Length: 130
Image (cartoon, rainbow, N blue to C red; front, top):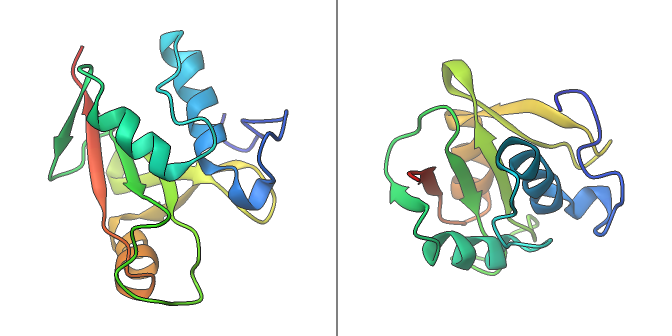
């Protein structure tokens, strides 16, 4: 999906399409959806309640990284959380809000800077185990 619009149906606008895109990438790989729909917060609860995933503290390729909307500890101009998939060499793939394409657009440092430090969001990692 790198370089393409992973969610061309645009159930959510591109600037809010991270979960929709992640769900499509996951579906293509595993033939099922996680259950987040288009919401980072719903994705968080779906992952928490899915026996196929465990919460982890360090990233490996394939892990889902998530900073859910509605969980920020402070008010900032970053009003929405974000979701992605960890890739090789510490890279993180996610929907690019400006063009709707699935890209390797973060690493752990840049994710933490934007979402945790500047946005006040928590950072969660989930690993598929089954």
